[in-house]
Each structure stands twice: as C-alpha cells, then as structure tokens.
Image (cartoon, rainbow, N blue to C red; front, side):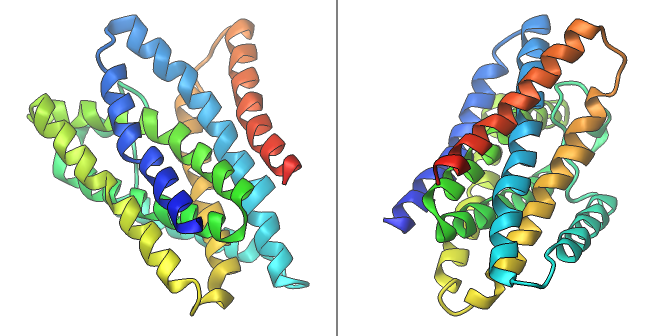
Length: 246
C-alpha cells in the first residue's frame, strides 16, 4: 500500500505537473502571467508548511535530544553550492533571467531537482500517509510553475513544443527513480531517515526562499500584497490541516 501511494503521488508530482504546465502555456500574455502569479505564492506556503510542520518535526522526533537544525542548515548551504554550480537554479516565472541558461543545463538541473522530490515523497510516506500527502502537495504546487518556466527556457533554446514536452517528461521520471530507490533502501538505512528528512526540508526551504521569494520582491500595491499573503497563508494552512488530522 505504501509503495502504491508513493508511486501514485510521485507521478502526480512529476508527469501530471508537466502536462498541467503545458496546458497553462496555452494561455497568452496577461492570462499566463496571472496564472503563474497566483500559483507561486501558494507554492511558497506549501513548501514552507511541509518543511516546518511535517519534515522537521518528524526528523526531530526520531533524533531525540539531538537538534535537527544544524543538519537543515548544512542542507541549505549544500543547495546554495549546487545553485552556484548552475545545476539547481530553476525559473518559476514565465519571464526571468535564468532563461539565458542553455536548455540542456536546465534539463540536468531539473532531473536532479525531480530526483530529490521523489526522495522526499518516499521518505514522507515512509513516516505517515498525512506527511506523504502534504509533501506531495508541496511538490505538485511548486512543480507546475517551475515546469512553465522550464518550457519557456527550452522553447527559447530552439526546442519545438513536442520536443520540449518530451524532454520535460523524461527529466520528470527521475522523481520515480528517486522514490523507488529510497523506498528500497529504507529498511537497511532506517537510521538515516531523520537526516534525509532534514535534508529534504532544507531543499523545500531553499526552493521557497531562494527561487520563489526573490521574484515576489518587486514593489506592489497593498491589495496585491494582501492577495499574496492570503495565498501563502492558504498554502501553509493546507499543510497544517493535513498534519492536524494526523
């Protein structure tokens, strides 16, 4: 049952996210910008909620008196180094500076990113179903705008729409590989679970604060700010409610 849930939700977080992103790209101009503009704040909330309400508390519970926070800090620094090596950074906007990156480099980064997402989903379901569902929601919510950005990068790099879709689906399959590998190794590496959960939490925090938040820093009206905060709060509340019922 656990393996089935892992496979189903990993597929939802990868291939279906690519297909949804492809549908969103059918929108034009202001409609496309508005769609991604609404998705990103919600994704920020779900990522932070999954890290702080789910992964970190579960990791801390298993580590006892040893603090999990240094591991989360080290994880954030590791993802910073990966970004500096240009294999982690992702564009979640339909118009951003990362579009200057080569399409092949984006696919490498996307594959690594999706692999980590698969690891996170498998680890979460290994702990509990609510944690697994909450983690999957966080993955899906940030994957859709990410894939929109990746599609645009590939199109601007000379890929046709069909070729861009094919390679995005192909790179998304690494999440399944990450999930299956993690599930297979959990019985023999159970002692590593809290450390891996902490690293997964670090990846979610880094994506939210380094990839998503910077694009929201532009000056805006109070009405726009209120909408953004409502969407972020909605994402956090979604995750909090799942863990409340756990």
